[in-house]
Length: 175
Image (cartoon, rainbow, N blue to C red; front, side, top):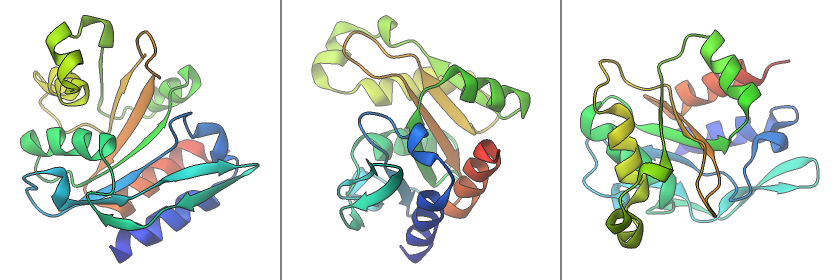
């Protein structure tokens, strides 16, 4: 939890990071080895939120604190058990361009292709992540989707630890 706390603190200090926080705000998660459920993943019970020009942590770091980002991590961890941390960011074409220039392992999925029963069950994220990495040979650095009707597009950055994830974010947004 201390490692995640330090990484969150680093995240809030990145210059102009608020421009990369989505409308649904940001969560940052870290799991135990081979988590069975989101209850074994530490996240923020609230979010990292925009407060004017600053990013502020609203909530506590606790197990089961995140639902969406933790679900994405859980899905990736099933295939790539070394990946134990993730953060969500605002989708921007400029960010995707930078990511591609850095040659990170990047996968995506199309939410408009999602079966109706999946939408109803609320298992969109697990479906999307599984779809994105099903033919992958390498663990993802990034998985993104361009949204759907009423659904915000999103980028999720993955790594082995919160420290690895925050280093990727710092590299991505250093100007």
